[in-house]
Length: 323
Image (cartoon, rainbow, N blue to C red; front, side, top):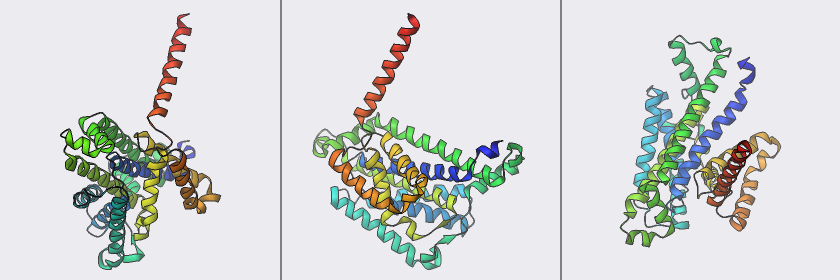
């Protein structure tokens, strides 16, 4: 029965949506301080290659590889974030895009470790690892009425869903904390925020490192979901994809990149006929969004209306029950 409900293809699409949501949230936290970074594809590549090499070449546990990839991306975020503090707008975008391209070229030419343009294959699969762990505990896929690969896909999806929710809640709570208010102040007016005693350097680097770690983690998971990575997976187009998740969905609120990543990942999958025109559609979307709705689809006003409607419906329901 459960085997009929679990479709591996849809689970894979949902898994990629969750990976892209994490990437979008990483872009969101960087944009929340007014920094436009196009280096997230580079951080994603660092996480993917670090975890892939550690687990495949050096046979380290998968958890160690993912954590190492995430931390290494954060360290590179710190290294890149400090010298680019003085850059803003398009200058920061160009500098970070250059970093991403430098990383891609390094991975292409470092044949002895990364296998160059051919790519790294045979990376341990996350679903298989989770299924083997359950088997070692005496739990078989057949007990749930599933095949082994279907159970692996389901476990990966559920694990990523929990992680994505945790990251979402973390950034949402951070927005209401002292850190989040400092981010908002820096985004509104950097000089005024500095005059109020906010440590601009600390908070901008903090946001940059958080974004880099989110991208590195997403990259590590991506490597262990696909089992194969190559430098072309993290090129210029990937950087634009990550930016569009936040710009299209909305960079003002944390719900924005969640909606953007979900919509823009799902639509090309379900409309296979237009998938090859994806980047042309993205380009048109960017032009339209910048012209008519630069804050994205979801902003504070949309969330306020949604909450107001829910409150009105609850009040009407209570009134009806009382009468």
